[in-house]
Image (cartoon, rainbow, N blue to C red; front, side, top):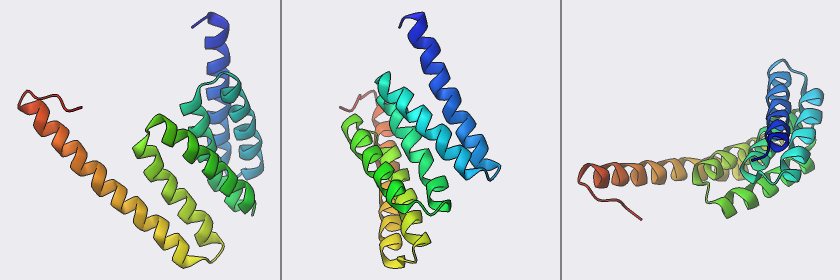
Amino acid sequence: MPAGCVARREIALALRAKANALFASDDNLGAVEHHDQAFKSTKRLKIWKEAARTLSNSIQPLILLGEYDRAFAASERARQIFTQLGEERRLASLDNNVGNIFHRQDRFEEALAHYGARVQSAHRLRRLGARRRNAAQHGHVPD
C-alpha cells in the first residue's frame, strides 16, 4: 500500500477512535460527526471491514441522539458489508446493536428477537471454534 494510502487509512482509523472516545465521554453529537467522517474516509479508501466497523460503532450514539432511522440505516449497511466479507462475529455483534435500537423505542419483542439471535450466533460460533480446534489438534485443517 502506498505511503499516502497508509497515512489516509491511519487518519480514518484515528477519526473512528476519536469518535469512540467522544462517545465514552457522553459527546454523542461529536461522536456521530467523527464516525461520519471516518466512514466517508474508509469508504473512499475501500477498506470495507473498517467502514462497516465504523457504521456499527456509530449506532449507539445515534440511538442516544434519538436518530433511530440513521441508526437502522447504519446497521443495514454494516450488515451488507459484514455479510459480503463473511464476518460472522461482527454480524452477531450487530444483532445486539439492532436490539438496542428497538429497546430504546420500547419495541421489546423485536429487541428480544435480536438479542436472541445474538445468543444463538454466539453458541454457533463457539461450536464452530471448538470443531476447528479439535480438527487442528488432530492434524486436520477444516475448509
